[in-house]
Amino acid sequence: MNSSSAGSLAVTRLAASENTARNLVMLHGIYGRGRNWHGIARALVTARPDYACWMVDLPHHGDSGPGTHGDTIGGLAADVAQWLAVNAIVPNAVLGHSYGGKVALALSARIPGTRMQIWVIDSTPETKLPSGSAWGLLDIIRGLPPRFATRDEATHAIMGAGYPLGVAQWMGTNLVRDGSAFAWRLDFDAMERLLRDFFGTDLWNVVEHPSSGHDIHILKASESNAISPDAVARITAAAGSHLHLHLRDGGHWIHAESPEVVVGLLCEHLPHTIGG
Image (cartoon, rainbow, N blue to C red; front, top):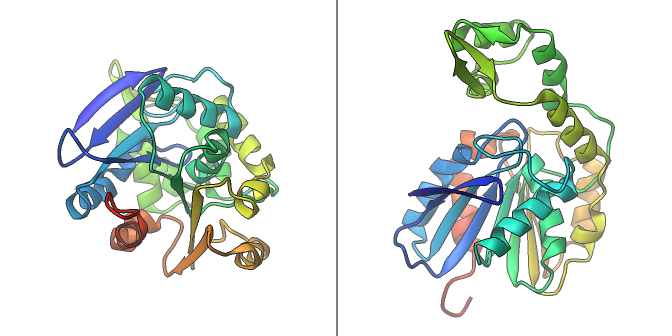
């Protein structure tokens, strides 16, 4: 496993060998970081050693800087595209969860000449009013103290606002030691800008009219409302040889709750080095 930073993005590579034939770029959701996908990447490179997984910390997340193309879906996609170009990495597949799913769709529009798969894990191309747990967390975090004596203190505060233990603990991973206390590494003003653009960005054209050589796979988790019923119907109507909808049991964090589901789909559908 190798970590590097280029073009303001921190990226971790996981592969069975230094000379893998294919590349899968993995994009996390809002408030996350690349290592959220380490378990999936480890299982995938074991089952499919022809792939290297590149786990990206998107701008403003993890160890990445703020990026250079703006705090929008398109801006983050441009930052990833720049990182790919600078490092001469040709993606055979791009996977994004939630916020990262929309970035993956926007990225695909920026590299239309590259033959690849786009995996959208419980994310939507539609626009909607700001809502959901990630949006609600903005007000919760802003209402809490800026520093905590321990991560547990922050976890209990978030749980006190009605969020489950798992979400509170995961959010607490964004705290870093600052002297004798812990402070948020995230810029929540930037998070708000990113989320507002997520809800306001329409990427139906990318989904319904994929670029030549692109195959789009959308995974809809049954217990999640991230993709509305109307969007599911529209995706189903457009499905064909280059657009595929996978309905699976689980919640929005299906990759953490049931990693075997995501790994199984990837192993089944990712192209093979020979003949794929």
